[in-house]
Length: 626
Image (cartoon, rainbow, N blue to C red; front, side, top):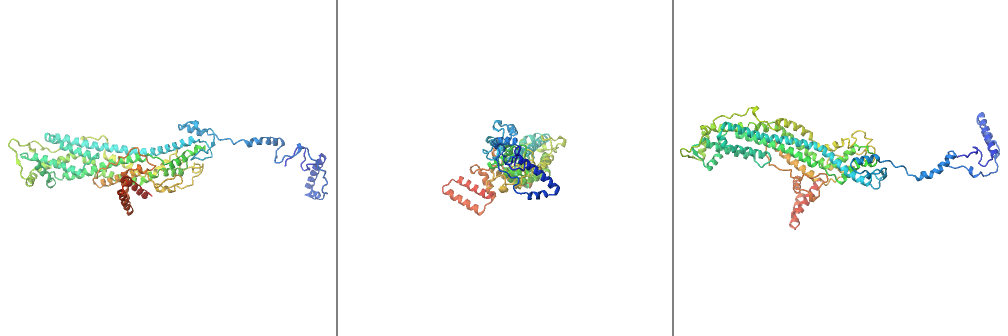
């Protein structure tokens, strides 16, 4: 209770000056007595007649009435009473958004769209609707910016891998092509020097050999074994004429001669050995180079991501909603970032298993290229090997001719004066002299195959698990999250605090429990599925190449370069070719057999066959991925 000036504490409000003076003196006397007697004053007051100091009540003047609830001096009470209505009417001072405005303008946006102080956030769709530094236009542009930042983060990491595969493919391709060119030049130079005009008259035979080898390497439809068998058969025909110049041979007779190539072995064991070496080396070289190109193309297609609407919301909430709260320097928590990235890159995570198998297959073929399938060790001495075969034919020409005559019949002799020039008359008489090592041309690649393979093997090992590691590698960037430190001082999606949710697993199926991104696990991304199929096809080719088996060349790079991954595809946008492959992989269960039968029946009923097939395949894939 507050007391006005002139009022004595302890006196009744109605007491006059004399009474108030007596009352105050009595209190002081009683206090002194109590202090001296240890409380006796209290007993005396209890014995004092009741109402001894009572007087008739007289109201105080209005100006001396006490003000209830104010324990301040009167002047301050009066000031407080006057200012209270003003304080109640005034709103709290809004926080400044100057730093948010500055960073917003630094992104290239108009600063006029950003409020100078916090405003109500009722207009926001994703970020918190409390007091905010974001207008509706800012949230929309931040949404686009978050997609842009996410894409750039994926591309930045993927570009390094893509450039590695691109540069190594270019090196290998350059090396292999120039190796063939140098081998052809070496053979031509030495055969001209050794055999002279006889070689020049038959040089197209050797030129055709290298044309076919080059065509095979670049992906032409060439059967190496058949092509090499044809080369030796044609060479036998030419040599048979040269060693038997006195006879006339018709085309039919020479065709009979070529049939005895395997049986007679006129060139010794060279054709068999060379065919085995060339086939294995060229299959391995071509498949390995193609594998590098496929890896380059897969990275190029998969790294172009298009987040789903749910993914875009999660990215905005993680990257820029803190700005709307004024927390411009607070980065997302590491595990929070991890969950958002795994949700947005769920389909890329599914690529990882097939990618790792593909990398292992590439490494196996690389080992073959270093060892028995080394194309450099096969092509460098090919001129010497062919020359040895020719010399073997010349030395055994009599025995070979007699066996041919017995099998194909005695040929007609030429008229006198028309005898063809024989090998012994100045033809293939000198033993072939190969280049010395220092004379051999070098490739433009400026290195050996062993060095190229050693280098690329290290890169292949580093490329394993790239897709499963991608979310973590993005979040390790200080621009994206705080990393594994300051776990209590980071943005957790709603405030500056610790993130308590567990990190979800990799791949589409694992996202069913992702707390940050809503992912439709029944709708796989078709671009990713095509790349998985491309990797499987290439892996099978690599396994065949490792075993030395030739396989048909399959061009799997025909897809549009403008495809993006991340959002799945609708039925009419999916490739029929991929759907067929995917259905083939899933197998043919009883249910799928019934589906096919139903499809045939419906087609006979008059429905569009193509549309129905696409629908059934789409449903089959949904069941498979579900």
